Image (cartoon, rainbow, N blue to C red):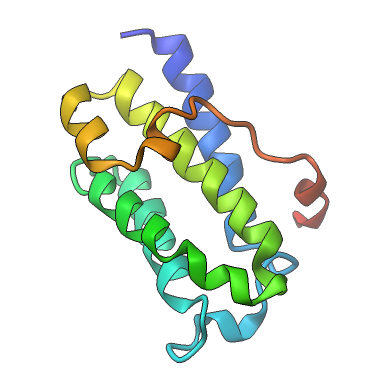
Length: 133
């Protein structure tokens, strides 16, 4: 395994983790169940938790599930920036799983939507780093 490549990919994912729940990116009501963004945001947060714990096996199915809920963001412009960052995050996680874990590439390609699986590595936007404390 390419250890340096894995370290870089993981460090990029850590930046995404900080951005995805930043106060400036999501309205506070997102975390209440009746809110339109609740399901995809919670699923993405589950992916974050699984990634941090190195429990990669369940992530591909959750990537698919989260992506299926992305159209809900289209009705609320306040989620526009989150949708972009979340999509890039899912692409980066997919890339990491494909290149730096023991998971079968054929299975990843079968489960993860092609728009994400084929997108390759992504970088988090620098703009949102301003919101870090």
